Amino acid sequence: MTTGPSASPALQLEGVDSYYGDLQILRQAAFHINEGEVVALFGPNGHGKSTLLKAISGIHPPRAGSIRFMGTEISKAPSDKIVEMGLAYIPEARNLFNEMTVVENLRLGAYNRRARGKMDRNLKLVFELFPRLAERRDQTASTLSGGESRMLAVGRGLMSDARLLLIDEPSIGLSPLMKKTVFGAVRRIKKETDISILIVEQEVDYPLALADRIYLLKKGQVIMERSVGEISKAEIEKAYF
Amino acid sequence: MISGSLYACMALGLTIVYGVTHIFNFGHGIVAVSGGYFTWWFLSTTGLGLIPSIALALVCMFVIGLVLYKFTLSPMLKTPNWEFSVIIFLLGLGILWENLLLQAFGPRVKDIPKFFDGRFKIGFVRINHHEIALIVIVILFVIGLNLLLKKTWFGQAMRAVAQDMDGARIVGINLNKTFGYSFALATAVTGFSGVLLATKYYMTPHIGWDWMVKGFVIIVFGGLGSATGAVYAAFILGLAEAIVTLYLGSLWVWPIWFVMFLLILLIRPQGLLGGRTL
Image (cartoon, rainbow over all chains, first blue to last red; front, side, top):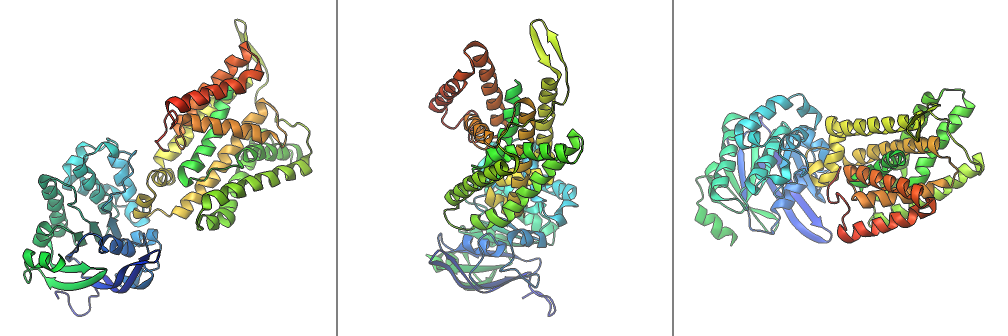
């Protein structure tokens, strides 16, 4: 652990259970992210990765357990309050506003009260990270390519002036070149800001090169925690297949 | 042109509610009538002028919409199969409210005075100043509504919710609040259309059903949930109504409307601009 004795983690989960109807997806999930840390959480498809992020962001609240963000319990908080506290969820499905322009989508990212005042500054940052979005600023979101809309989803998350980004499978369905761009941007966010990041992925390469620590999620439980360097790609893949 | 613009105004109220909340308001007609009755009532009892009466009526409509949403619709939306229960509820409430109006004000025809008296002539055609005023008002109104949707946080939130509900929650929009204010706004917009309709035609507590059926045809014609589509459809059908009335008589308006309606459903089942949102 890199943090001092007084620092509480940016995010801490304990005993989180989540269900869809009667189907239990998360079983006593527990892990934490320290401030400024990049954490990668790997796991096979259908083992609860996205459910975990939806539980944290309040989109699909958990049935039991504790989720603390910057020391505040948020497991029962509504999603708009959680965003306002500085937690941004970037879904795999993107959930962009398809009939709005790129810049309208980004501005809506700054909907929460805390972010509105910093909108212009954050917009500049996003356009700097993704020059492609600046070129396409007045195009409707539905006309973007897969990679571009992924950039827009990440950009919209950044616009919320987040202190913690939850990114769901940023690489899925992207060409190698686009993957490089998207993870390049994540790397710059890590270097140039003090935003903490949780990347949830199936694919191991890029996140492993980027993260400070990794977790493995299997059958709704966090089964392994390692610092990067303690584990290789082969070991991760062996653990979950 | 004139009736088209009035229908546009009414259809917009219906579109806002449907686009944002996916509630199909079967009490829509009576909402429009209420706007007219409130205005008439303020006008005849308080001694206020026409414009303050309208303004006051719209404020009342907005508040009623908000209260109605908060205490009845909001809890209903949390139950499974809310679509059907909400439709029946709004339909029932509409009938109840209609009969309350009937009790309070009687069945006799009411109207709201014209904004301007007088008329002018272009060739054979006589045009009332009032009708010009109506068109200008509706155009300004549509522009204003458009600005509200595009340029304010509230409007952008409404569009966001209409386009992707989960996306809206992700950026921190409170769905319930946005639903409530959209419903209230739509109630006021619809009430306003009732006021305009009552200055051009007349009103009784029952006329709402007529207006509502027209509103439904228009928004389905234009594409459910699309505001631009509703405005186009209102003008097309309004124009058709005028031409049919002139050459065939007003009896033929409904049959021709429905022929056009069926044609568009055959050719473009999603409506003119269907699939788009606010």
